[in-house]
Length: 350
Image 1 (spheres, one colour):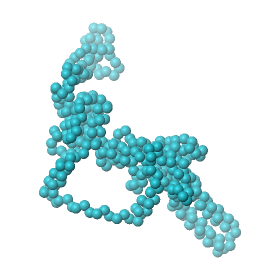
Image 2: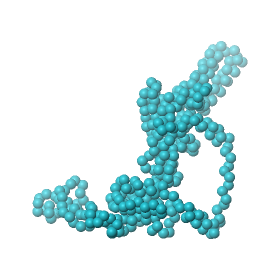
Image 3: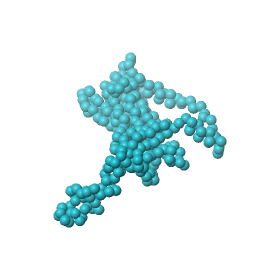
Image 4: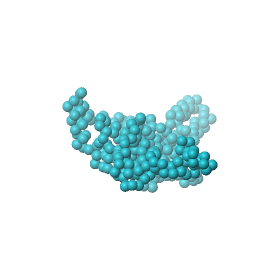
């Protein structure tokens, strides 16, 4: 195996990337309550305006019309030409006003998984008496990020989801967004780049077709307590809609004339142990994916389990809150430095 090549110095940014970075540096950072887009003036940063392709073509036609009027002395043509130029200039003002005064805030998603889109919730408030139509919002980078179209009513608010791809587990901050509004004629687009503070926690992707859960171990629970299960018969209760036919106590129901359902339990001291160290033959991320699949399966079965990770152990428990703590531990777990150095040295020798 060829040893990994040395990391090359990053390529210098192109002129277009430098211009994009300069344009997005508008200083509007979230202080915890959201970002309010300030009106554009000569002394404060606000929405920048750029002509659209249609706006550039509209200006070109206006200039050609002006040249024709000068050459052929068309008095009525001057009226049409300067009306078109006036519309073009006023469109720039209207485009900047489509964004000024809006307040934006963001909230992270409840769950996010590696390899999928994390759905951040964006909230826009419009205190003005005029509605804002045709707003567009997307992540500033990459340029091919999905665009969300929004219409914000006058004096109201709207919520929308902005999808951000999660390439790796751990913390995923919401990147700088690009908010765009246009004038009614579509000649100009006002653009601002609010930087909102929201961070999602990305869980490892659960392994597809993961093997069954490891066997439960006795003596790690809480004594003689018992819990609902499928081991020992404990009695009957009145039949409820949705009970499986195989769980119906047919003999008892025939004697009493009413349907009853059998009840079973199991020792609460049987606890699953989900251990990182007991998954040989898999790399660290593959082990985390399998443990994630097991945690989700244990939650579905309402089983008690404990999670053992190098340097961190989650005591036994069950339920939604316990599963959430386990998934957070899997998402935040960091490979020990000694292990990563050893893996790099093995790859280098091979």
